[in-house]
Image (cartoon, rainbow, N blue to C red; front, side):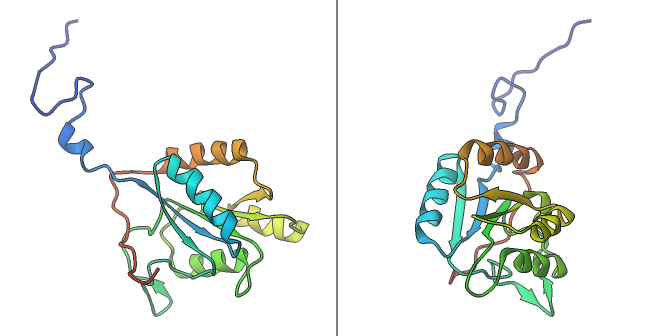
Length: 168
């Protein structure tokens, strides 16, 4: 059986439409940690993997600031992945993720992770029940890479993301 191939000005030779490729966006990560050095290291690591990275030293329920009446106003997620420290001054990572869930956060819970130097068994159980990944600090970057690769399989780069708030 012969398959005819059509040459066109908009194809890249692999059958992909170049016009569609232009609509592909960067992957986006949001990171929460009160330790500035960890934020810098993770931002650099994710930037090298072609992520747009937003960092916060204090947790905010919605990094885009688009919450009204305890619900996310955006039709699209604010990020592709979210990584949060567990112990932060104003709120712990589990509470952050629970509140996001209650407010209909659009980020896939499987693409959320918590990192901590120590995690009690009851907290590990909560993370498992929520479907949130756990990283032991100091982070093993090969483990982080494996998790990112799994997350990236779930990311649709044609799906738009919510706009970044101005004061973040």
